[in-house]
Image (tube, rainbow, N blue to C red; front, side):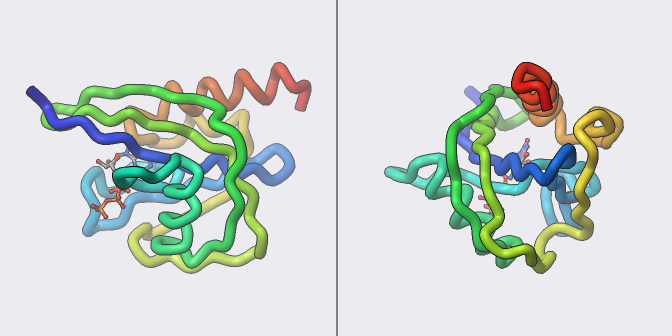
Length: 135
Ligand SMILES: Nc1nc2c([nH]c(=O)n2[C@@H]2O[C@H](COP(=O)(O)OP(=O)(O)OP(=O)(O)O)[C@@H](O)[C@H]2O)c(=O)[nH]1
């Protein structure tokens, strides 16, 4: 049976744009765009995980809110349950360490990116939630 992991990913919104990062050359799935985050450790909430991972990988100071979408995707050898958490940046700064690019992408262009496969349904749900909220 394929291994299974729970992964928390940050949905960071600024006006009509979302923060995305491109997986670096030393990461699995290098070159694909994602919502930054990482594996949830035993006993950790998705919110604690995402705040920790954003500090570790991007030196970003954040606060996490509600879970807004989830998606389970089965890769060849790994099943990933991706939990998207709304996150606010508390300081407007970050530093790339594992990713090789980061960008603010308008919501209506999010699906044009070469996203990690698990992220596509998440992006669709984020767009739908934003449309429901009328923003
Ligand atoms: N962080 C993150 N990981 C994702 C996303 N989509 C997706 O399929 N993944 C997968 O989830 C897994 C965990 O991601 P990660 O490598 O960032 O986690 P981590 O920092 O805890 O791992 P590591 O420190 O052991 O390398 C990887 O297999 C990654 O390919 C996403 O949007 N964000």
